[in-house]
Image 1 (cartoon, rainbow, N blue to C red):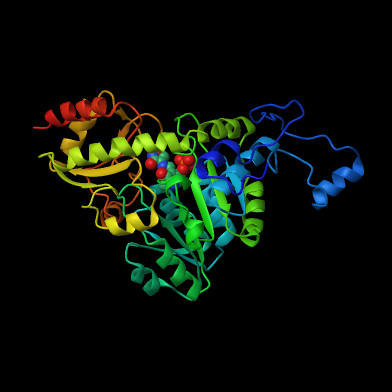
Image 2 (image 1 turned 90 degrees about the horizontal axis):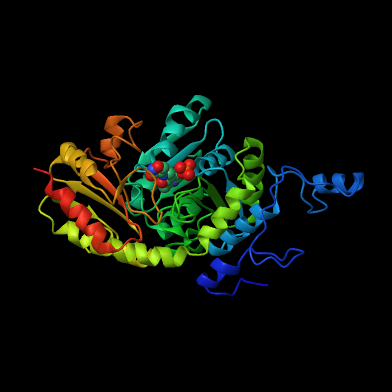
Length: 394
Ligand code: LCS
């Protein structure tokens, strides 16, 4: 069935699916490492790309194809590349698009390891990067060097919730022929589609909203055009960070409810953000749905909803944060995000702890910052839990 013209919710259910020989209603799990060739000529043709038959699961597999085609349709892109993790996707992009002597510009407050791997490891191979506040596109323009190869942004950023203007980034990048990459993990394609703004590459930690059930680690990349896809795909295959067929099946199953999960999560998040904003022990709240978000107008322009992630700063700093995290009961003290369960974490001591302290503070990740991933429980239960936790702070 041609699903290209279906609405987003219909695509979630039908895009990427294929008919198997038994009429299975769901995608079968092809749990195999390798595929039989009909004969020697067939094997040779598959390797030569003259036949699109399957070869080996690190290279291609029907269950994984179904997921890649589904996400590519959701992001309005050319094709998808599924990876074993979000970091697998990040490294596939870096390895394919950067080279010795090249330079990258990126959001200061990106997910910690996406930055640490550049500063600690790619730097050993002569890659340079400038991390800056991409909320102000002029900062990007001023940082461009003759050998800048990619502009890599995360919006909203993890965990500051800073928002970058997608259309402005594309405008600047095109003037200098630079490839644009967006980490769309916090929004999912339900709320934001960077390729529609002209981005070249979009990717996700599939571990989060796309899978949505805290039971899978995975990643996926989608490109706008064939040319960049043809650079990224062989890199994923040779790095060996492919997804597994069972993992792909689980993500397809999780994706079917993406929009209903996101709707509930952001409805809950709005009420929680409003509650936190008026709480005397909270210094500030960053949530794209609140008018107090410094880029509220931009959020309205480029996002179809505020999402399920909230960051807030406690007046009592690190100590208050510890008390809150040790007091909550329903809200789980755990890293990761985007699942059906509410999670709370402290970036300075957890997700961003490997970052150099000054860079962390310069990126807006203060000691007292708390990150909250809102699940789909009854909102009153989440609010009660937060209230009793905040009460414990002296
Ligand atoms: N990009 C973003 C925005 C992320 O939040 C993460 C993981 C990644 C990429 C990497 O994806 P992974 O390899 O873990 O699938 N974020 C995490 C977090 O905030 N807590 O734990 C992991």
